Amino acid sequence: MAPSKHSDRSAAPGPSTPPDIVLVRPATRADTDALTRIARQVGIGHSQPAEVADDIDFSQALIAGQSPWHQGPLYLCSEAISAGTLERRGVVGQCKLEVMAAGVWKRQARKRRFIVGREPITADYEQLEYDAGPQHAMEFAANAVSKDHRGLGIGSMHIRSRLLLLRHLLRKLSHIETVCSVTLTQEDTSASTPDALVYPFYEHAVRAFFGGRAFDEVDRLRYKNRARDGSVQFVGEFLQSAGEHDPFRAIPCHLLPDHVRSALGSVRASAERTHAFFLKLGFKHHGRYDVLDGSQVLELPRDHFEAVCRVETFVARSDKNVPPDASQRVFMVQPQQGKDFDISRFRCVRAPVVEDRGELHVRKEVLGLIDARDGTMLESLLPGDEGA
Image (cartoon, helix red, strand yellow):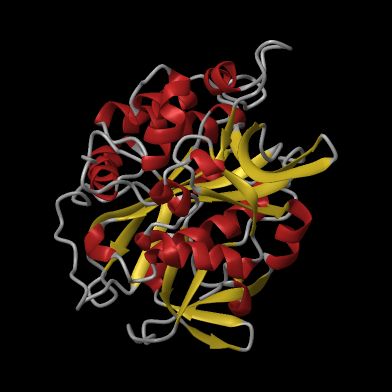
């Protein structure tokens, strides 16, 4: 379903009138301006229109089967829709699924023991060592919501929709072993601008490894230089070992300034609910950090993901009497058995529903948002698996 031609011009509701309906769908070129504004406002993802459009173009090629997963993202966006009037208020968020780029810092405890004369001297310390990171990992990336729509559960909706989507994608991606999320750390708000983010960890510990280049430039380069196996050649060239006389890069933690060391892996305030959501699902931090900004990398083995991401199915019932303030569920059309899953048709909605003995009563207009009708089979995460 194409986005509304008015989607970028409609006024977004304030916190006092939250949208009761949220639709997640693949991003298109028509969403470029809205997604650029969100990226610049939130400080996440590419913030220039040409970069956003390039990501969308790749995503569309990926959906069409013309580009490989390991070379770019599947780009999704969310629309807010009035539960009362069904007015489409515009694009209010974004999220991505992508094969995780290789290269992280791994916190390692090290011990050295010496004998000086007859006196033993033991030294215990920690350092961050360059590590290839989780292998064959799919990342929940770039979860962002416009500032005037935060606190309304849209970020959690992004996670739920991708959980439902990834269940079907993994059936064709047998090589994926791990599911990951990189929880954003706090940038230096006093020094950052929409066009130039500043992260203390990068400035103090990493920047010199990349020739003094600014964070945003290196961040763009690492995703523009993906190798065929999904690794990032640019990062590896600068940080991995190049032989006996050029070992892998390491950062002794005790040499970091106090404010940098204490902030390593900290969670940005706007990302705390997302972080807690992933932890509740069973994702864990195993001492790995983003190679540039030091954000936490949360990981969940594939078999654990399939165990926690459980769904229940319903028969859709078109019902004009479902009240706008009814309880909400997140659901999508259940793909037909025996047919390949078509990403281009993916639509996931959070909407008021009435449950009745295996049936989900939904307004006809809401069913239309996901190309469903009366009698269509729907699937939804089990309530206990949806997190907070």
